[in-house]
Image (tube, rainbow, N blue to C red; front, side, top):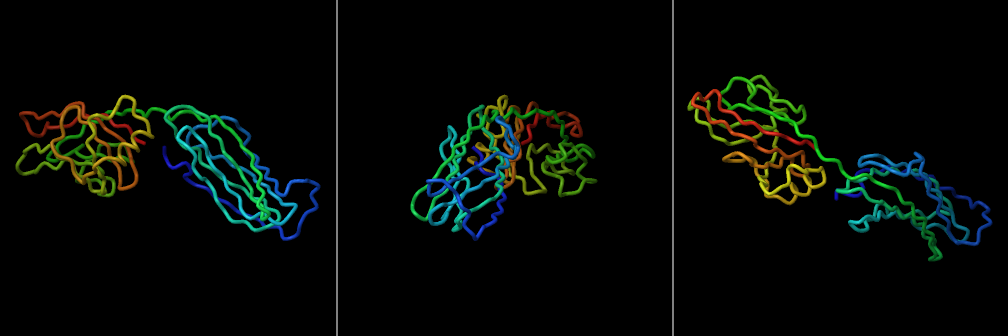
Length: 264
């Protein structure tokens, strides 16, 4: 699972004076979802308004935990030390392989040692399959369509393209006209051959897991039919491609790769 929390922004307004609350509990916490929904997709942002107050002592801390089938992960753990707090909390919904419930546990702890917790449960849709796109990339000595940009999702001309966009290019020697079947990058892209990866059912989650656990290289040799190649930066998986056919032709300028790519 991706990191359970990808981003949050919190602003806390501490109220120095104690409000008169007619509640027996030492501490109360009242989270509410600003964008009133019950079901979400991966990447949606949930905005919570969180109010908490103490009748005795002060609120020493507030924490939030996420509970899924993958386990429990701390989302927020902050020291407060105030009798009353009121703040907004933004939470980016994580991606899961399958649809499931996401439970968020909101807890306020009082200086008396007492605590109060409220649990909210939401439905999260499973991470969708990535969409395949087909590309033909020629050997380096072809004067056009001989390199690939992941960001642009485009086959380009090496000589006329900005090097900052050349994520993949064939490293055949121009003068020798020998088809190397070697790929390199001008953008520090890393490659990981993973032929056992289930390309047909690729999802963003399992692409990321596979890339992060793979032996990554700055170049990849002997690119062959049916190779499955994971690509990304040091800590940023970017997608997976599958080689459908490598054409090593009698006329070298027709040497080319045909592959399909799924981008995260």
